[in-house]
Image (cartoon, rainbow, N blue to C red; front, side):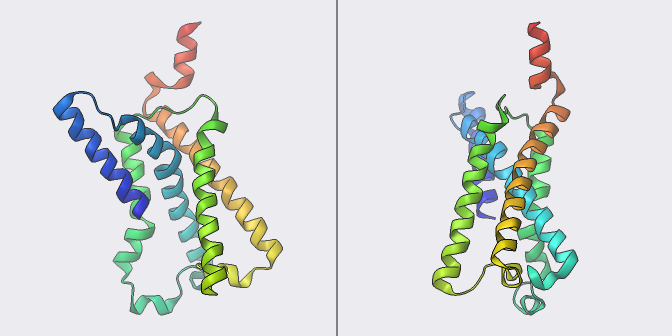
Length: 180
C-alpha cells in the first residue's frame, strides 16, 4: 500500500508539474517506479495473495483477522494495487529497457529487501509475517521464495508486454523495424 501511495503521489506531482512547466522532473522517477516496482509488485501482491487465499486462507489471512480488519480494507491492501496499476498501464505509456535484465534488477532488489524485512521480523519478533511459512520446511521455504522471485520477474515482463500492447506505435519492436 505504501509503495502504491508513493507511486501515485509521484504521478500526481508529475502531472501537476507538466501543467505548470510543460517539463516534469518527475517523469523518469514515475517511469522507473511504474515498470520496476508498482506494476510487478502490485500485480504479484494481488495474484499471490488471492491464489493462496483461495487454496487456504489461513495461510495468508487467518479468519481471526476478520474481527479487526474489515473485508473492504483487505481489498484495499490486496486488490486495489492491481486495479490502479493496470489502469495506469492502459492510460500512460512507459519506457521499458531493451534488456529485460537491467529492467528487472530493481524489481528483484525490492523483492529481496522485502524478504530481508520478513526474515528480520521472524528473527526478532519470533513470528512469520505470513502463516504460510509456518507450515513449510526450510527447503520448501527456499523453493517458494525462488518461485515467487520468478513470478515477480514474470510480472515485470507482463508489464512490458501490456505496455507494448496498449501503445503499439511506440513499442521497442516497432522502433527497431522503423530503423531497418
